[in-house]
Length: 183
Ligand SMILES: [Zn+2]
Ligand SMILES: [Zn+2]
Image (cartoon, rainbow, N blue to C red):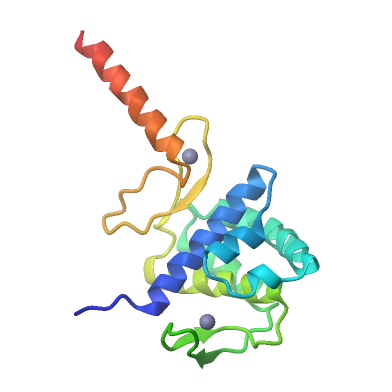
């Protein structure tokens, strides 16, 4: 039986976290602790306020990169990610804890929480660019929504952000338009 790779699912989860935090900041809010805790970042619930605040600032600095990923050519994205990676305290180790199975931690346990999260995000992005380029980053098709999404579907068919209202109001509008044209 094929077991989904821990690495592949960690990349997806980490990129979805980065997208969610970027969408929040564009909306003028930031709930990093909850988003990270929900995604299984075990240090999130006890992380200091200072490191959550630093994380907000650092994701904010990455916003120009993250928000332009949909449609950005892969070569440019790689160059931008490499610039960011040079600044980080990355020191990989294979670890196994909490029954997850062997996986890589990019930062040592002594890293600050914000260093850990920013390193995880950039390494997930680096691996994603090697695997799929920028093809899986998209922008919501609903009118009046610019939110980003990460498309983990097999056939690249995702159209809407994580806000369910975007899909449902677009489908309702499509349905009404079809009914009008059918009358
Ligand atoms: Zn781990
Ligand atoms: Zn949307």
